[in-house]
Each structure stands twice: as C-alpha cells, then as structure tokens.
Image (cartoon, rainbow, N blue to C red; front, side, top):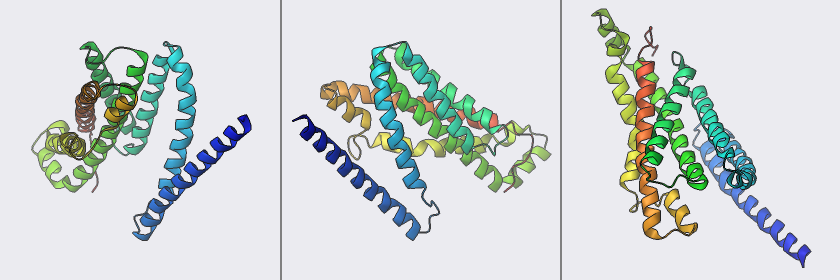
Length: 253
C-alpha cells in the first residue's frame, strides 16, 4: 500500500513537472520567434523559482515552528531583494547603495505601519506572508524607478544641462525626471489594484480563502496588503529617485 502511494506521488510530481516545462517552453519559443532577446532566461527563472520554492517549503516548517527564526528569514528576504535590485540599477551613480536604501526603507516603513496599526495580527504566519509580498514589490519599485530615471535622464540630457547652466543643483535639475520615474513605476501596480475583483483575483485573497479564512477576512487581508504595497513602492521609488538625483554628472543618452 505504501509503495503504491509513493509511486502515485512520484507520477503526480512528474506529470506536474512535465506540464510546467511545456508551459515555460512555450514562453521561450514565443520569445525566440518574436526575437525579444530573452534567450533561455524564462526557463532559467522558472527552474530557479521551483528550486527556491521547494527549499522554502521545507524551511517554513521549521521557521513557523520556531518564531525567533522569522527575523532571520525576513532579513534574508530583504538582503536578496536589495541585491537583486542593486544589480539591475548598478549603472546609476551609487546605484547599489541607492537600491539597498530604497528597498529597506520602503519595506520597513510599510511593515511597521501595517503591524503598528494592528491591521494584521502580529504572528509568525502573517509576518512571513505580508513581508514577502511587501519586500518583493519594494524590489520591483526600486528596479523600475531606477531604470526609468536613468533612461529618462539620458533622453532629457539637454534639459538637465540647461538647468545646471542656470546654477540649479543636480537635485533640482533632476526633480521632474524623478517624479516621472516614480509615477511610471507605480502605474502598473495601481492599475492592477484598481481592477482588483473585476479583472484580477489577487494571490493574497485567494491564499487566505484556501487557508480557511472567510471571504470577508480574506478581503480585509488583501486590502491591507494592497495598501501596504502602495506605500512601500511609493516610498521606495521616491527614495531611489531622490538619491539618484544627486548625481554630479549628466547621464549619457
């Protein structure tokens, strides 16, 4: 009986893996056909995510059982998010430091506000769930805001030079560019938030339902997450662009 269950389990996982590879392979094939230039990157990230999630599933059993380890786990998430964003915007002046500062400040402030206002119970499960979502979105905000800032600065180089020639500080010369970079980095997330329940069913809401929460409780949890993400991403984007705006040179187009 035990061997039969084991064989069925292996067959089930094998079937899932084959289906996932087929789905990801379709993405790779489409990107190659459209000459997007991604190469095998979609497959690499899915395989990496599969490995990381498998390890995470095993680790969470121990983490959730020993509350003090949550602090180390959240620190690991912050470190990984900061490092990932730092690599994406390293071309900026002090880009790595800016990315770390932006991610840490945005995520930390949002989490303190969420749990400080008791919008979510301060327990191990909720902390891990909310922190993972908020930190991940802070990472995205830092990357998008930083890349948008650099791209727009290069495109509007004559305007920046004009400001500097008039005696403006680098911060003033880059101010409007920073505003635009933050706005562009936030619009996709804000549009998705606006269409929640009509176009999308957010993961936190669905996950809470599957976890046994009532629809009302799941909706409350999702609203807290959405508001927290908006705060974290906005603060992260503002910090990144304000620091990047202190660049002592004009970005090349």
